[in-house]
Image 1: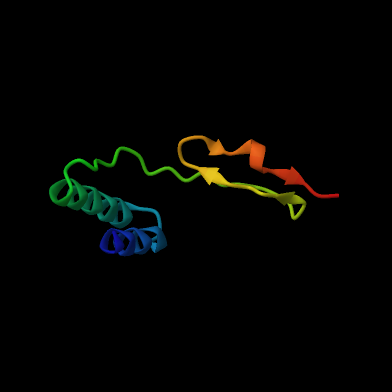
Image 2: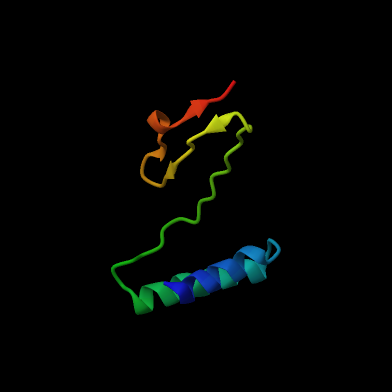
Length: 74
């Protein structure tokens, strides 16, 4: 939903601290109020460290890296 994406992008730009935590809490409350079947339970960010030699990196939130689609260039 574009409205939620905009709120999430704004929260990500805030410095760590109570104001950012309050922003995430407001986003969670709004999500549960407007779209009850969609309930947030985690705000997880998984960094990926790769080189220019890695190709075909596909990230899937369920299976993480799809290893069969990746290859290493010479």
